[in-house]
Image (cartoon, rainbow, N blue to C red; front, top):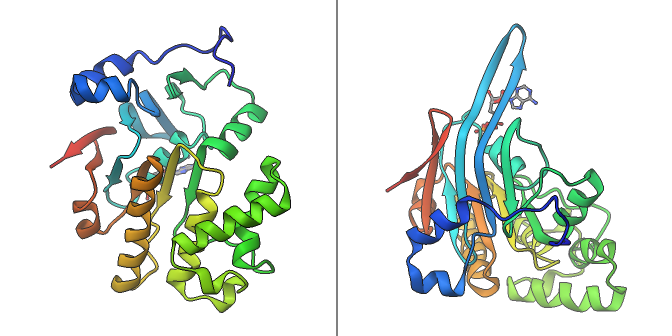
Length: 255
Ligand code: ADP
């Protein structure tokens, strides 16, 4: 992004968010990676309007994991899509690194998504005809990395996530937990600043969910990515740095 572009402005919420974290921390991390400011989202449903978010605010910080815990239909996917620049809010602003994104073209948003944002879904969404290694190489090659370098990085990431012996397997030859860890490696292949996950352990048995969750927290610590995970798993949510929910169309911190 070009910060001298007049369309980009510094997030007004950055100052408030900084005060909550304390001065020392602020010296190292002056602003959140993602700041959702007064977000509004509604959907037309027949004659009526369904209001999902209104005046919703959320700051995501580097190296911090945030659980988004709310009932089905509350708007978790909507929030993740807005934070990931997949969907436009009806009002409010999404700041990435303090830079407003609403004025960006679709091409610019796509480019930012490729580099800065990683997504993990409930089902792995890996390409079935490619190996684990190739699935993790692809986003890097789309970004412009040479095949050899992409393969090296993909191999390293998969090994880091305990999949050294599985790199040449196709998704159908992997267990659910292994598939999800490959999906995780793919999501962070371009070293994003933000990792967004929608029920990433929702399809897994408790022990496998634990493996995938450990991999996620390991990645947050190692890469200082900012992570927002929608989850129904209260036990896993309890082990994350922060918990938030959607209440009365706003984002509220849980204790
Ligand atoms: P969650 O992820 O918490 O289950 P969602 O964000 O998927 O919730 O959806 C929130 C509400 O918005 C649901 O009632 C859903 O039916 C509605 N909704 C989501 N997307 C659309 C859409 N494109 N058009 C109309 N309604 C939608």
